Image (cartoon, rainbow, N blue to C red; front, side):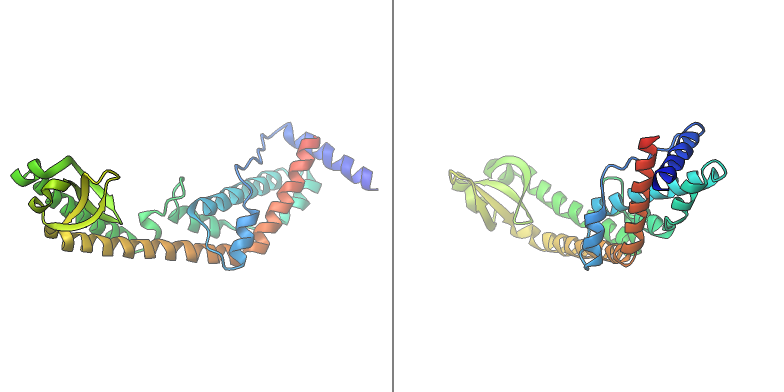
Length: 239
């Protein structure tokens, strides 16, 4: 009986492949990430996209086989068990970009927050550029570039001309010839930028945490879909 059932599955799959091109390829297996989400772990944007891609494969398999149930009734029985999780897919794809980045549209707060963040960064860099282009800046700076030290925007000042650019020394080169100085004139501007950056970081983490919780709450359904698609994949490989 078991052999006959397997033969019928293979025959149905051969008949199905005569009329459709059904690809079950997925670039990654999200199973470990889904288990972690079920244990209250927070997934990365890339892991969330891998979950969404796996759900794409599940949905495509389900819809393709069910459209051809007359040709493959046994395979249709398998695919009927694949849970429909379009809402989770939509939530992830509306919030996460192809590279795993959290999109501006992920929350009502994120887009204006990032706009303010860019403006704050521009204010700091404009002020630092003004210092670089000043007489003191042209004389005292080792290089006409803005650097980052300790998440602060700094200028590279020649050690011997430290007094020409009053500010906070945050680092020094290996030789000691160059000091990385945050000018007093930009400290408050940089504080504003850093506060907004931290706020944006918290909002991004909140988005990832909420999406991960949603994945975790549906972990059993996602796992069942992966299992059933794997069974279908084996049948198609036999065919």
